[in-house]
Structures are given as structure tokens and as C-alpha cells.
Image 1: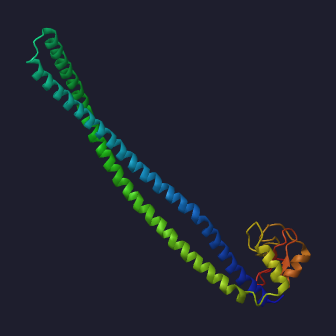
Image 2: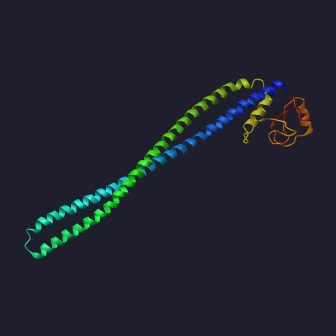
Length: 240
């Protein structure tokens, strides 16, 4: 095996591992984007919940105010009608109803004082939530757009690497290339070609036989006795 073959394999492997790294990174993007979308939805829900809580309390205030207006109107009518009533029992009943309405109005007015404070607090909370979430939403939108742009860039780079790959395989013998391709597709996702280090495979770190070391010292590319990955030796610093 010539130095040209080794150099070609190392260049090919460098390109392939960079491509695989980009593909792995690309595969992670959908999950990251989904996380941003989930974050966006949570922020929107939080803003909506704060606004809904305020709206509910404001409606409650309006309902109380409407009830006060109804009771006041009813009392005014009873007051007018009482002047025309001749029977004492009817007159007393009207006065009792007017008094009861006055009592109810007093209770509702006390309730309103509490509700006004609650509305003020909820309004402040809703505004703070809206502002805080608006900032977070802008950040999420920016992150999402950056991921989209990054995805586009990575896809373009992967396409370029794939297009240039055939030229990188020309100086690799067919049999060696077939072994390399098989290892490249392995589930362990490790580089097919590893350097011998202190008599051990750079991939599995197991010691190889002396025979394999002898062959590597001649500049050959051999398969690891344990993991079958391709091995080469640094001829400037051979491991013997």
C-alpha cells in the first residue's frame, strides 16, 4: 500500500466524518425547533392566561356595578310607588324591600372595593407578563430563524461535500474502498481508519499482534485484529 493511498484515505475520511458530523447536527435541529415552538406556545398561553384572569375580574366588577344599578333603580321605583300605596302593610313591605336593597348595595360596594384592588393587581401582572413574554418571544423567534438559516447552510455544505466525494475516492483501490465504506456505515459511528498508538488500535484500544505491527511498519494498511477497523502507522514515529 502506498503513501498516496493512505493520504487519499485520510483525506476521504476527514471529509466523510465532517459530513457525518453535519448530518448528525442536522438531525438534531427538528427537536431543537420543536422545543422553541413549545416554548413559544407556553409563553403565548401564559400571556393569554394573565389577560383572561384580568378580563374575568373586570367582568365581575361590571356585573357588580350592574347589580347596584338594578337595585338602585328598583328602590327608586318602590319609593315612587310607596307614595301611592294606601294600605299600610303594602307600604311597610315596600320600605322593607328598599331597606334590603340598600343593605345589598352596601355589601356589593364593599365587595367592589376588594375587586378594584384585585383588578389593579391583575392589570399590572398582565402587563408585566405581556412585556416579559414579548421579549422572550422575540428571542425565541430569533433562535428559530437562526436555526433555519443554519439548517440551510449545513444542507448546502453537505451537498458540496457529497458532490466532491467521488474525486476523493479515485486514488483508493476498490477493495480497500469497499472495506472503508463498510466500516463507515457501521453503527458505532467511528472513523474507519485509525492510527496505531503504542501497539494498540486507535479505535478499540486493544493491542494488536506483532505480525500486524510489522506489516504496519512497512507502510501498509491493515485491519485491527479485534475490531477490524483499518490501521496505519505513523512512519515518522513507528510504533514497534
